[in-house]
Picture (spheres, rainbow over the protein chains, first blue to last red):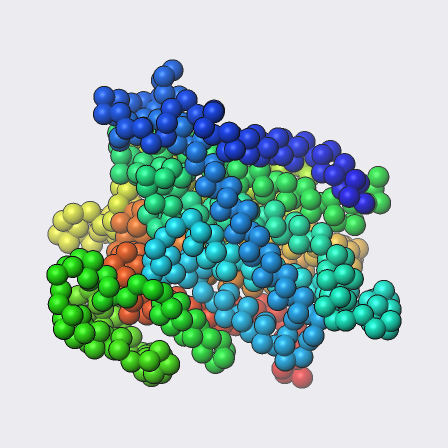
Length: 279
Length: 315
């Protein structure tokens, strides 16, 4: 099954390209200190706001720092936030969704009410409020994005669990006396894993977008630590004189998020039973 | 609805109050020489010396009567501050919703009919761009291209300096010019989602038996589409429109601060920066309320579009 899915995803050329791109970004992020042409923190007052050239591929910023190097280091922040926030959201969503679907009745009612309340907030308002009262740091940002992004996963898992819990293999497990937690974690959730994986792929892209938005507003990653949203934020102040600061970090965000979304879409297609009969 | 409202106020309150920083410590940072007595009186003034559940009940009592307290920053009533900012935010959001509706629905329908053809593929590209592009970056690019390179459109504020003295129609024109960029960019992500949704909804409907029946009995294609397919396809779209409201309102923080539009989003941003708790809490509540109202309106619209609900009620 897994082999088959991988084969199907790789057949999709866009998804393959996205996979390669994301792997490349990963490598760049891990080996940033070897790859980046300059120190991303190095201030150079003689080369301030220089347009892209051979020496500075993406130009320099208002303090003469190399924009290309800052983008390379910024990949670390984006990937870290993207994956960890996704992990938190998937963990909470899967757990609450499974509990709500499995136990039903008032447990279900309460959890789904919480979901409704959380969905009523414009999520950016909630995130901004939390980040504003706590000191913004990369960890708080991850946690807050995760805490405000689990609701769709919870709904998804709940629906899966609702349909799975009446199936024979679950009833059989219950009949031989398996505990509730064993039934949920060993029998039900493994069968609900695929839609969760699809949701997780989209969630990484979503978290990266939110983080860059927060950093752009100045309430995310704090300077001088390089982040894609942070460079854009400064770029806005120099928009009339230094277009390169507004252009390149945005391309980095766009391509990264696009890659995750394309892979998610390919996974969804590959996992959709409607397509299986065709080949 | 009532439990949700209660939950909303609870979350607002908990979020703001469990934070370690308080406005007292914040002011301490600004003037470290403040005496302990001065700090105490500051805490008393803001009610920060009372236990948390008491503060919540006090605050809830105020919120129910729509009294949102006084701003820490300038001592003005939060209600007044929001009231003067809210209209422009609502107008921007309504215009965006309208633009999304007008553009996305025809695109989605057309694309469903041309399924698999070039137009449909272009739509798919557009959809993925819309989902993946950071819209604030798009706003920056649009500002560079339309505002700075070609100087076609103004890039900040909602009116030119001295607009008060312009004749009426020029003022309207000035308004429109200022609103084109923000509204278009705000709608971008919504456009992508909505046209994709309309498309799949339309495709679903076109597969139904009643469409085959309508075609089989020889109705012209135009009638099949407008009278039989469209209404059914638009049902889920209406619901989605209601769900788009929180995203739009949340986005207003970013767009209003990029385009310097004096709306509620910009107020929220400056309050967040200044840790103005009453204003932050007030706007959080109002934002959630607007979302609920959006969902309620979507339900009503659903009622209008879906004949089945009406039949049930009448018979």
